[in-house]
Amino acid sequence: GLHVEEKMVYTKFVEIGRIALLNCGKYVGKLVVIVDVIDQNRALVDGPSTGVPRMAANFKSLYLTDFKVKIQHSTRSKGVRKVLEEADILTKWNETACAKKMAQRRLRKGLSDFDRFKVKILKQQKMRIVRGEVKKLKKQN
Image (cartoon, rainbow, N blue to C red; front, side):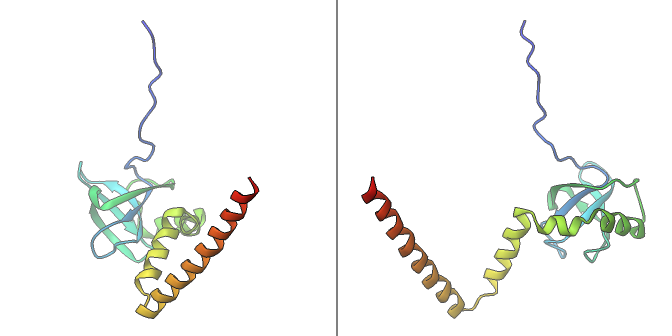
């Protein structure tokens, strides 16, 4: 018979050293490191450089990122902080599309009514320019 090479569907696993983002609870939007796996539903997480204390977090409340650091299981907060700073994880995270989108949402959430109005006017001006350029290109063809 035919042998088809199977490819792994998932690339991000819940593993010790995986950087995750908390997506609910008191520390929503903060980065943490998975320090240990408690059971099939929870992990021990620690975020010494983001202000998150060591705590148990449900897997459903974690968004796994592409980043991973090399630590032993149950590494103390001091060791986790050191590894995070050496790997420069926070800077790398802030450059990702997900982090930029979250920052944009936070900025939009804080806008006043007049600020939203100004954004609307700017969008309208931009679209007028774009439509004008598209018409020029259509006339050329």
